[in-house]
Amino acid sequence: MTRHEIQILRAVGMAQAAVAAKTGTSERSVRRIEREAPVATSDTAALVRAKGVGRPSIAAPWTERIAQWLAEEDGALPGVELLRRAREAGYRGGKSALYELIRRLRPVERVPLVRFEGAPGEFSQHDFGSVTVRYRSGTTERVPFFASRLKWSRYAHVVVVPDEQEETLIRALLAALEAFGGVPLVTVWDNPKTVVIERRGELIVWNPIFGQVALDYRFAPELCWPRAARQKDYVAYCTSLVACGMDLRCRFHAESPFHL
Image (cartoon, rainbow, N blue to C red; front, side, top):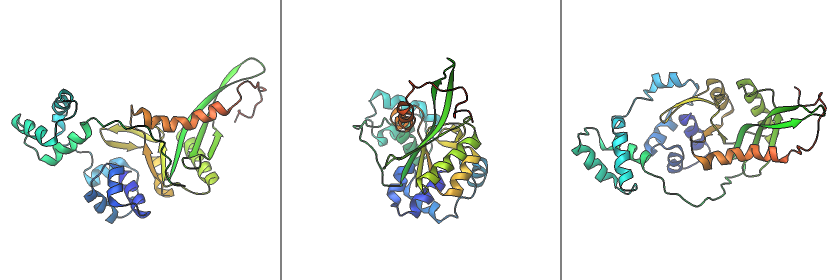
């Protein structure tokens, strides 16, 4: 999906340097991918076979050693020094592979939290959530919902759903796009199995059904990184708004509109 995202962002005129920074790729890769035919399949396995994606880097066995050196110096060691130490310790690979490993392992400088808005129609957030409602009989029920929110305008669309399965997610997403009146450039998600099956290092194995929808409707999906609290908060905020907005002091009849 990174190739698809690069093609989408370049199609709307985003600069190559900006696309490279956003997707974590090089400008050279951006130039190559935008010359390729549009991505037509979300099958990660097929992509791996066709492009050789996912092969372990020659620098991968040095991950623990590099991480240890960085930790000893609070991440302040320059890349050239780390390369020197690695070669003295027996590293025989190229410097580009090692520098890429260092980039991923080096602690990211913390910056003040700034509200991220984006441009109109650029970003939307989507997630499942749930609330507990109480009926007049005294019983309670967990009611799941799917919430979608445009980042710039904060317009929200919420639909009660029967479950959190693939078909439910796709139907709820398409209903949100219809309510939005169009398709955002980028959709932001947490990491549900209905969207992403697993991560293999930096390789994301997308759910093929969701992936095909992204290709067909021409939006770029983005995921929160695991344990990245600030990214997850942006998406979770969407569902928390819905939960907080419901007056849970109300009591509902057993035959309620929540029963789908």
